[in-house]
Length: 594
Image (cartoon, rainbow, N blue to C red; front, side, top):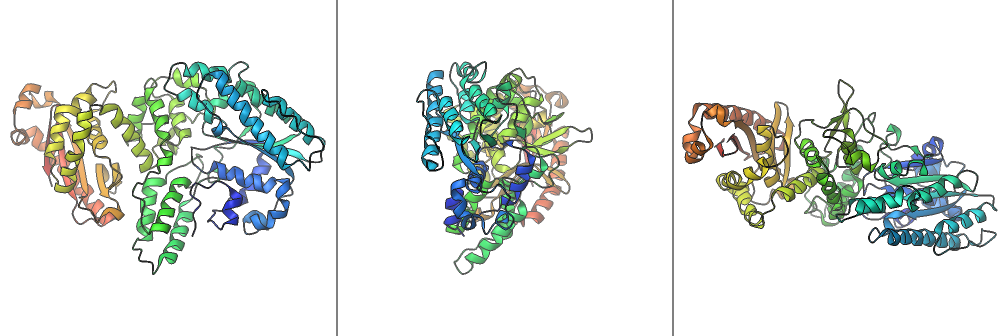
């Protein structure tokens, strides 16, 4: 099987025999839903391939290729009357440079639109009765000329806009002075981006534009354009289009089964059940409608994994495709906002702390910047970025948001670790401490590091920590490593929630590394009746004999034993090392190896 990782050209995909998960059965529904559709999904979620498929389906010039392209797909067996009936123009705003001053960005936008219109003219020259006049400094005049030419034919225009908000988001999130001013100049008042969308809106009023399909990541730019483009229909939260992009578990399971059959006799020893479980942990979990029955796998990450499995017969070494690294910038942007770091911690805590009255479908930058803690705008923005996802409704009809999977969780942990572990010496020392725990089950060096350096960093944050949460985050942010582990915080078991389980990836069991389970408890110094100085002076052995400490150790040990039994059964673990860990204020750590 050939997997189209990184390939978003539908024609090349079909003609060259790549695997394609058919989504053409949704075309009729899209036509019935409206003429100007807005579809938002996180970055690298298959939107560009979707637009390419629509381009090939509706393009006048590709009528002779319809059977070759679509004959083996659902729409080929039941095409709609609109197939191959349009001039198709496509804009891709991810190609517009976002650096420089406003004049530079506007010039880049004019250039991109003119390039697209020129390519359109060349492609349809024999179908247009008059040439299109390209105005180098005014692409909207060029667009008007194209519409004038189209209006003299029996056909109309289908406009596809990919990543409509890409360069505007890059301008906004750039870590440089004046970013918000440049963003405002592009979108507010008579800003060029707003003017472009006003032209699209006007074109649909009888000037030759019949349909438009617009993709992007978030609704922020649309909202900030206000009346610039208020005629599009939002389909991004509709349950019928939940799986328009992305893969269902059944689809992934089917591919893995086919891949297993192909790999027989080639020396591959991976298990389809293990591969599915690993993909589920790292890539599944996205839900884009409150009414959706099932969650989705990230398609780019899934193809990245499947391509490695098909070509190399093994999992990729890194579960996060580095092409998604730009999502880190979005988390950095959120973390810099007022109370943004608090939201990242709430999401990562794993106990359903991110509750909002409802998911906000339209909101602007000022809504996010003016927001107070726990408000819906910032959480909704993380949802659109794909770093939170819908997890259902509470009994009080509130919207619950969660981190979708381990790849997204890793982005959170990485961002917080970068913000908290800033000392270069600490960064150099940490790997050896983690190795001692992971290979020898020796917790002492890491505990010393946390006591002497890391507790001080965390306790100085503005976040209002609950006591056990601070301890858990100290370990989680230092131990998370998806090269070896499925590091799961608040892992659900039949007996409750384990605080932190580090389970080796199935493909990493050939290395010398241990499965680990840590259960955390906290005792305040007042409960102990000791001062910080008294606690610091005593040995861990002496502290462990104090009645209150011993009781907490017993409690944590009992929970760890219960959780460990479930983990051993679930993952077939032979040598799970478990620890009951008690923090005494933010001064000392005492533990018991089980």
